[in-house]
Image (cartoon, each protein chain N blue to C red):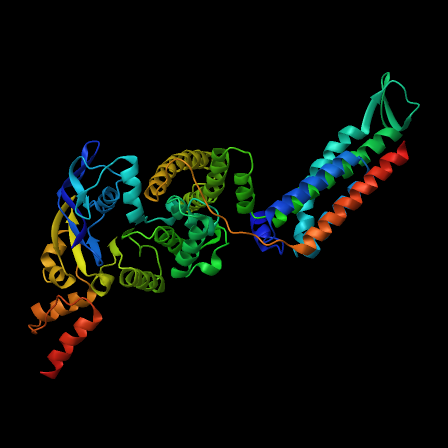
Length: 259
Length: 278
């Protein structure tokens, strides 16, 4: 759950979440619609610039986080790059399997390049959001949105109690481990089963206790909370607007150029 | 004047009797401590005082009137009688400190500006103002406990009930929390009701003490009165404060003429000085 801490420590964490969400989603949409390697590259660079330079998130951490989607992308793209055909004329590299050819075409290289950069661009937009916006702010934004309140409430309770139950889980695991509960594979399995079933019972109890505590504070079926007002970050808005206009203009220009 | 009291109250969980025919009263504007061994019925009693549990028989009176159990009456009661639970993780449900504290005030349908002011004020009172935008799960146990207290203070209740507020805290944390409660009691004229196993703090901070055992009231009085009968306490798995115990030994075994009901350092000091000057 380090990613959660990163968002709180970002210099942009106090910036109004609405601005950040609009920026991230617009950038992502442009990146996808433009269907251009250049725009995708610009998106990735812009997001990294904001996260690292403006948000002051540690550069090494950001690159470590980026390797996670990269890993999936590389494997996903391997499936796209190889095409199957009975015609080898367009293939640059191929192997023959009976009557069919497995190989790489010019077109498949291009489509992989575009898929790869586009996905990475979209992912970096989401990374921008999750690395600069604390989850609480997302919740307070969702509350104001058209999403039904009870769904946001459930999400918020789940988010909070993940940490409580994670803590319980760690303690049970520690107490099992200290009594040789994981000394070999067989006892390990048994301990895991006990841990999971115990955790389930605990979470049921926790739900009841939380309900009691909520009732004691005047809970009457809906959770109304106040969240603190955020500051508008002028340099960020300026940068965001310039960026979005620039990239939109570039996209339009590229599309027009192709025609 | 009693702000809250029970009349012949009994409560049963399924077949087990948690409280039996208990009549107990809490004086307005004072700190009253409930002493009792584990399973004596303290937590159950607390939950009946704020209408969470409905007594099987008997009544709870708030400001001289029987409490009602309609939605509207309960809401009004819970606004006036706040409970701080023993485990803050049971109480803190929001991942933002500020939002969590605002919950109680929002339920009172106050204007947003007032909710904000009350939330800030409550956070300042418990010394958590500067940590208000930390995520709840990043707080220490003691900090969570303070936030839980702020979450009740924000409703400006007339009575604040605390289930073992000192459990799990370090010595510094204990005295800070107890000082805070004393301040709330003096400055806001709120009534504080708490349970604790930390017997040594009882004579320092409590105005009154009730001893309960097996769901019944054993004795009531000022700390001095309660601690003047150590045998009764021991019968019910309780003990004297350490200092009072020392004085008791001096009195009974060494035949010194000291009053062993003084459980606080200040009282014991007076007793010992009297003895030395003789």
